[in-house]
Image (cartoon, helix red, strand yellow):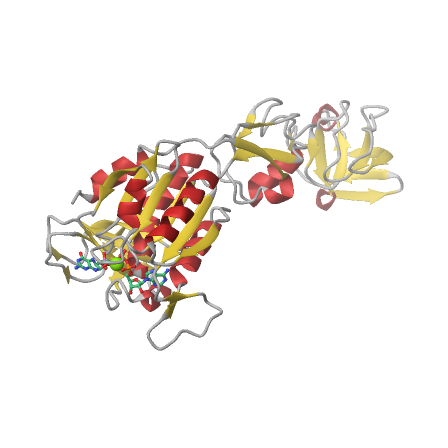
Length: 401
Ligand SMILES: Nc1nc2c(c(=O)[nH]1)N[C@H]1C(S)=C(S)[C@@H](COP(=O)(O)OP(=O)(O)OC[C@H]3O[C@@H](n4cnc5c(N)ncnc54)[C@H](O)[C@@H]3O)O[C@H]1N2
Ligand code: MOO
Ligand SMILES: [Mg+2]
């Protein structure tokens, strides 16, 4: 049995870039940017007027002029209207491009308009006020969003503003989720009294959708021939195979032997952890990686979040170093010498700390408990008593805020 950290290192060593693909902007949300996105123009592209009012030459005000003749009106999107003289002003709207002959905007609230004249009422005005200066945010050609950024709405907006109608994103690996076990029926079936529905596949498929990864589902009965045939096909058609079940000590747990027969090289089998001890991981010479997760639903769920998701993030370059910690809200004991992944519910204390309250459930078959819990807290196998206030790493499986 290997340690959690060793299993993690062996898996992360198999992270690789899959490819880059172009997606239309309206399908890019949730994907990972593959190359830097650059400004096609200065941002803002001109001296953008930030308040509705009048545009003047500051020097006239500085020389004591307070009443300016109004010589035109410029809306946002109009070609700039130059001032005919230093005693002139134009009415100008927010979002308009400031004419070169003006350098200051006085908003309507600080003016009086009468008889074709605008009189400045404000005691003090500042040269260049109420302007968003050209290029202040980003210069043309500057990176506005770096590669490996998760594409969110803000980034979509920025891409739209620089005219990127499509984005180059990291290609996601092609994944198949395989369930095995003759006790399992599909979710639209009415199970016999001694059967269950194969929920793990749907849990895994749903968890991967967060990363815009749409995995296929496949069920294989507990027969060596069927397992061998279907796994052979999957090794040809997919980049990644995620199995759930059939890898422990049972007489019908054929998966490890068939994987090895099909030349999927075992990197490890069994990890010093609970849940998830019988976890198997390997890779075929053709590059296909195989995550054979233990069948107990909480084991599958934990191994998916502790091992598969970090591997996927490493493949697509997504926040690979991000770690989240929380402090235990009460004492907890776990005797066996195994790394324990305690289910916890997370709250935020008045001092802004993440508090983890144990929410154990009835063991790794109790997937109902996962509906209430928010994360797994990783408790080191070196200790058996864990005190309130102690801080440990957590593996959230729900948004925390
Ligand atoms: N003698 C031993 N028995 C077991 C050991 C052991 O070390 N010695 N390990 C236990 C642990 S820990 C786990 S975890 C399970 C894992 O076993 P498998 O990976 O072989 O999983 P299965 O036996 O196929 O199923 C376990 C359990 O999970 C249910 N299951 C399986 N697939 C699904 C699915 N797709 N959806 C919902 N539920 C599923 C299955 O019905 C079983 O109840 O082994 C222990 N045994
Ligand atoms: O590995 Mo287990 O403890 O049933 O999930
Ligand atoms: Mg089994």
